[in-house]
Image 1 (cartoon, rainbow, N blue to C red):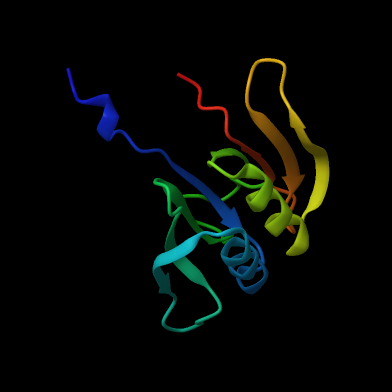
Image 2: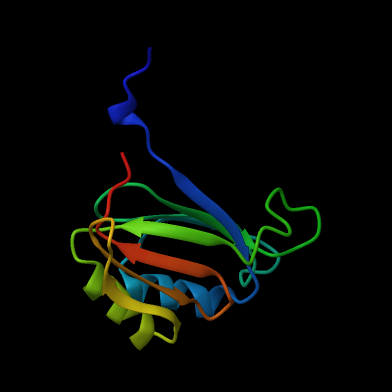
Length: 130
């Protein structure tokens, strides 16, 4: 059997406004790893990989016909981080709309949810499903 400790999930979706979303992702704490733009139109992202400092990351591209990820947004993601309050507060400060405020959960951990500027649902928490 493969070593599951080496498994990493990369959430993938498309975006309508690349500038808005890359600014928001950076403000939340994601770090650009690679971004490939259309040579004819640099506003179009063909493929991007942004990492979360604690592991894993996201891949995205501009919403456009024929794209492998066309129609994948709005999307939803749960980001596990040791300081979910900081990620949540950064998301809201960067323009996210609160869906569920940060609270201590009955099942353990702490979490809350927002909608990013394009309507994608993000949950931030420190509960690590096993």
